[in-house]
Image 1 (cartoon, rainbow, N blue to C red):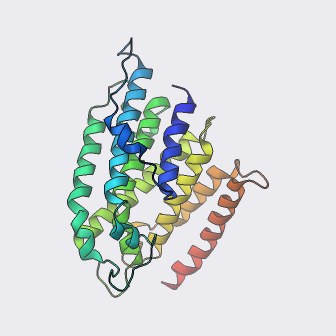
Image 2 (image 1 turned 45 degrees about the vertical axis):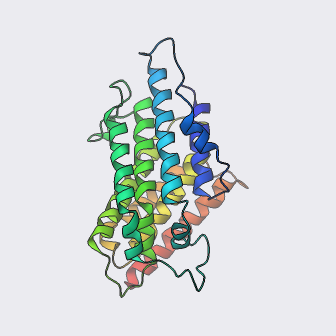
Amino acid sequence: MDDRFYADIDGSDLIAEHHLPRSGIEHVIDLTPFPTFPNHDAQETHVFLAELSVRRLLNRVHHTMYGSDWTRRSLGLQPASSDSPSYDFQSLSTILNVSQELDRQLDNWFDLLPRTIKPDINDPSRCTGPKLNMLHRFHSAKDIITRPFLLCAIDSSPENDVPPMVLKQCEASIANCRAYLDASERRLMGPSSCAEIIIHTMFSSILLLTLGSVCPALAHLVPDIDTLQKNTIQSIERFAVDGSLMQEIHGIIILLHSKTRVLRRAM
C-alpha cells in the first residue's frame, strides 16, 4: 500500500488535532460497507482494511470524547460561561466508561490483526513496514483516547490531588506518547510522503510529555524528558528546511528543551 493512503488517514487525524469544524463525513463513513477485494489474503488488503476499521474507531473517539461541550471547555477550546462552569476531575469520571469501552474496542482491533501485519508489541524494535505502521496507529489511537484525562491533570491546581482513576489514565497516555514517538522516529528514518503530518503529531506528543514533566502530580512519570526531547529534536532536524513549518516546530522544541531544564531545576 503506497504512502498516499497513509497520508489521507493521517491527514484526517491532523484535522481532528487542530479541532477544525466537522463536516459530518464521519457518519457517512460509519455507514459505508467495506469494499470487496479479489485477493483477501494479500498483505495490501489486510493493511487497507485495518486502516479503514481503525479510522472508523477514531471517528467514534473524536465524536464521543471530543465533540461534547464540556470536553471542549476542559480542553480550553471554548470559554466557560457563568451558567456553564469549568469541569473538574468529577466531570471527567462521567466519560471514564466511554473511554474504557473505546479502549477495549481498540484492543480488539489489535488482537484481530492478521499475522502478516500484526506487530510484536513486546518487541517494537523488530517492527518494520506495515507492522511498524500498525504499531504507529495503535499507540496514536491509545493516546487520543486517554488524552482528556492527562490534559485535565496538567490543568489542575497543584493543591488538588489527582484521583487514582485519572492518574491511571494519565499513565496510559504518557506511555503511549512515548511509544508513539519511538515508532515515529523509526518511520522517519526512511522515506515517507506523510513525514510532515507525523512530525505535527510528534510535536503534540512531546508537548504533552513536557507539560507532564513539569506538573508536580505527573513529573515522576516523565523523569527522562530531557532524553525524549533530544531524540525528537534529532529526528526532526533533517526536515527543518529554512523557511519551512518544520523549521518552526524544530525551533519550538529546542526552546521547550531549554525552558524545561530551568523549570525542573526549580521544582
